[in-house]
Length: 186
Image 1 (cartoon, one colour):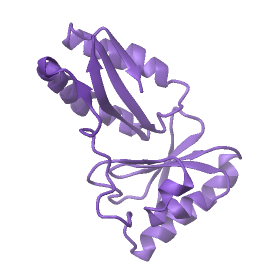
Image 2 (cartoon, helix red, strand yellow; image 1 turned 90 degrees about the horizontal axis):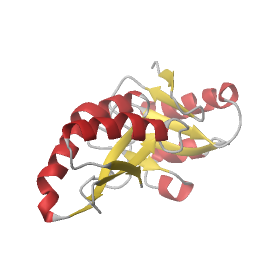
Image 3 (cartoon, helix red, strand yellow; image 1 turned 60 degrees about the horizontal axis):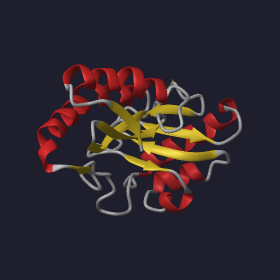
Image 4 (tube, one colour; image 1 turned 30 degrees about the vertical axis):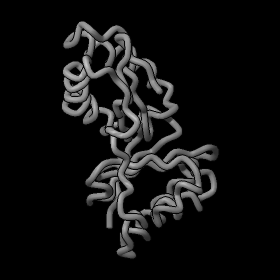
C-alpha cells in the first residue's frame, strides 16, 4: 500500500492520501481523543504522541500536530493509517459518523433562495479547492447579510484561513450575491 502525503497551507497539518475511499459520504473532524472513540483509525492516530486533530475527507486523512516535527511524526502516522486500512476495520464504529451541514443551520425563511445559492457556490467552487488543501468548509447560517461558515481539517486554525475567508470566499459570494456583506468563521 502506498500513501501519498501533501503539505497544506497550515504548517501544523499534513494531508495523507491512501489511494482509496476514506469517507465517501461526508466529512468528519475529530479534535480530541474522546471524539476519536468512534473511529478505530482516529484512535490509532491519537495514540501517536503529538497528534491533536484528525479530519476524514472523501479520499484523504488530514492530521494536525500539537508539537513535534513532521519528520519524526510522519512515519508513525503513516504506519497507523497503513495498519488501519490493511486490517479491514471500518472507518467508523457507529453507523452514521458523517457530519451533515443541514444540522444546526440558521437563516430566515425569506433568505432561503439566497442560502440555496450560497450552498451551491460552496459545493461547486469552494469546497473542492479547500479539500485540495486537506480541509473542508460548511455552511452554518446567514443573517443580516453575513454568511457564517465552519472551517474544518487543515483549514481550522490555519494562518491563511482568514485571508481565504475574507479575500477569496467573501469576494466570490459578494460577486454572485449582492445580499452578502461579509463572511465570518464560526
